[in-house]
Length: 103
Image (cartoon, rainbow, N blue to C red):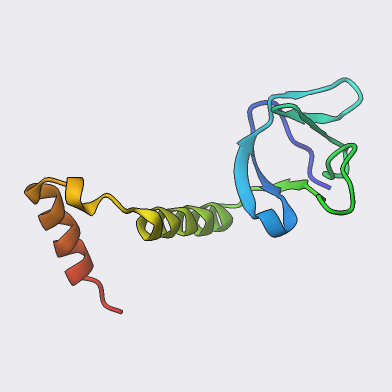
């Protein structure tokens, strides 16, 4: 198991709920990791979790960070529903970027 430090960015895996990037808020004297209101054991698994919600933390690699960022961007684009509120310049920028894609 990796050892994390306060302020370090980690990958929090929430099973079927997905993954996110979080920051270690603190490390207790016994080695527990605190992120928000959650505590994680030294083996990376959430303390007090249940079999339906098994969260754990992992080392954040540059590759995984890039993958999550790409998924986040895709989700934002897919869910964007305010195209009619964009000004003409913004629409032109988005159009040019989409047009230049090689899919």
